[in-house]
Image 1 (tube, rainbow, N blue to C red):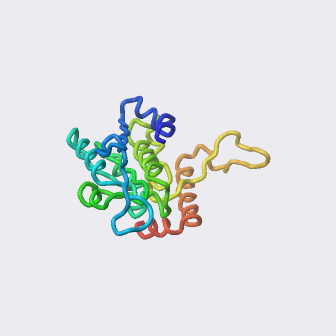
Image 2 (image 1 turned 120 degrees about the vertical axis):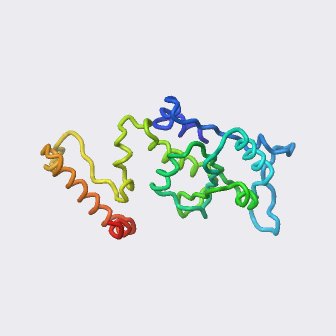
Image 3 (image 1 turned 90 degrees about the vertical axis):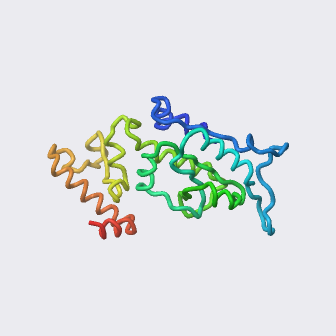
Length: 219
């Protein structure tokens, strides 16, 4: 599942530049079960299957014996909701372990003993934590210095200053009667900067009042 997203675009270039390393581990390779099973029925009954403690524990213990890790992260719907500030913080980490849940979940003892942070990418349920891990990985890697060709690009993304981004335009200056705002063609950097700031505030207020309220309270 990870081959496509990690073999293209920004993440691929980051790996090729030697800025980041990504290692994918198959938990089935660490189960002592001869059938390579990594799940079993839940104690106490109920639907679904639960990922077993032993193969996950064996893998995590192996990894942490090889190098230090800043966080051991479990991707789960009941974790801390991912936002830009969290991605910024994690981008300054040295090494991270991302554990992808599956089936009905993982044995709670893994969460109690090994997991240091739990993250959700939104209030909905996926078939597994793989997609969430891809989202988290991309959001972290793209803001590591040297990954993007334009170092300032990531700093102007939505949410970096707790606002949505201002509208953007490119050539041609007019298309079928639709014109680029004159201010952007003026060459007046100070006025353009003020326009972008006003647009960001206005767009955030209209489209994401929840974010705007936080911004308004802080500023």
